[in-house]
Image 1 (cartoon, rainbow, N blue to C red):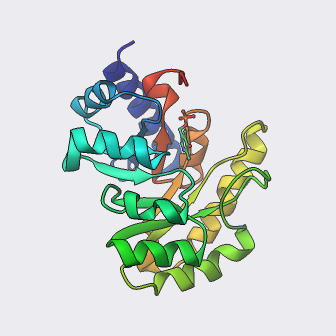
Image 2 (cartoon, protein in one colour; image 1 turned 180 degrees about the vertical axis):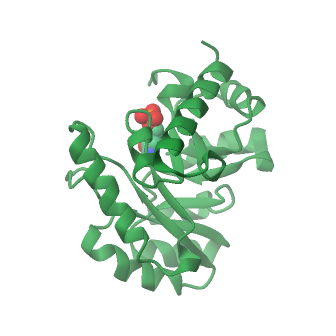
Length: 219
Ligand SMILES: *Cc1c(COP(=O)(O)O)cnc(C)c1O
């Protein structure tokens, strides 16, 4: 299977899940996650219609951005340290991993950026993201930071869990998202290779897919 075949298959599965959810598949953004993937594979994905790229590491993204540029939208989906914001700001259109006011303020100083608040919906200790209880108060504060446009929420489902608890985590993120003011309720970013169909059924409008497009990662 080529990258283009994989993308067609993922798009088919997105369309089926959207149908089950009663939403239009065109309203769901597919982000191709390209960590550890080289630029030629990224280009193949773009040739197959991918418009949004997700990266976890600032340095890797900056290198690919230099080669590919603004023909796609760049999403930061990995943990972002404050001291990397200066390097990240010129690359990323959307920073999905904001989990503190201090980080949002640092981003606001450097760039006009769209940000999502990352919420820890799995309860797994190793994960980044703000707790569900703290999410809405943080959203309110981030939304008023100059230079920042708050555009929604991002979450990572529990890794080794049964479908029921994955679904519950996604439903929880969706219910938080629905409490945001309309202007901040643009993207609900949830769902990866193993769970994007469940995420769409629970209201996701932005899925982040790596393995199902590019194959297993080789570090
Ligand atoms: C790596 C990663 C993905 C993609 O994971 P796959 O399981 O390969 O689809 C999505 N979101 C985040 C935050 C990631 O780090």
